[in-house]
Image 1: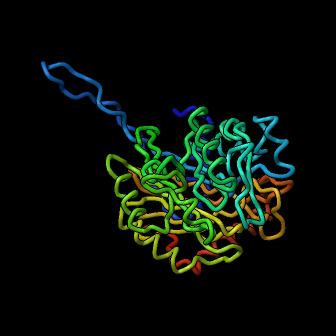
Image 2: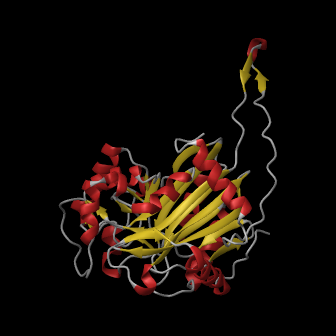
Length: 364
């Protein structure tokens, strides 16, 4: 079992299997049955050696835009409670991922021309780990808010803490490099990139062969290449993208076009955000695509931008077989899981967002 414990994992799996209709699941669950016993294979000299562990079904969890500005900064002083009650949902998954929309630095120079610049100390990684977060992407329009000095500090903090981060690096190869991890026998490869960069900062922020920065999804051939490389030796390829338009509830044509190209390149899951409100999700053939996770831990969320949630995906034999949206409402900057009639109403609204995505409710 994963580090999160057998009871928590079983609870999430059971919840996704038994409450599909009530919780907005759009995929069809497959009967699991009993797992076969481990087998052995013959080695040289007639010796027997254990076969690779069987691939078990796994639950992945995704949350949206996260930073620790304003009143949220003080929460880093108590890492175990920094993300509030939603951490229980993240810890229950086999792997949880967020978009870390901030530079990790206490120095640097604010990016010119930006109204909002975000930064947070390296203790952010400790808080995320304590909340059950396993990996984040920093490829977004705030990942280098404190320019080259902030980038150096961010990369140093990543190296020191060894916290898994994608979408940022010392050069383009490093920024596009997938995070690889094996979860219950499933080999995962996770890539992060941004399709959103301020026009005056594109050159300064984009990682190249000779310069550090962010993985840019504006370079579609390089993005496609990254997915194809991640595909090699992997059971599941996850692509995390920063894309779309702020406060627009439907995906842009360029999002749909890029999603199609990445599906053809081998992506099994595509998730992302930027709009500060949740967008719709569903299936493009048998790849699960979600166009906008909305805010998650965000100091200024209110009204429509306070609508949040956790996306759960059940993966079996390398494919998403079930999805579930667990609605939340951001209060005081942190997402509070919704319950009862309010949760059902928000879930119905969320399912309706699929209407303009061109995605299907179930895999083909």
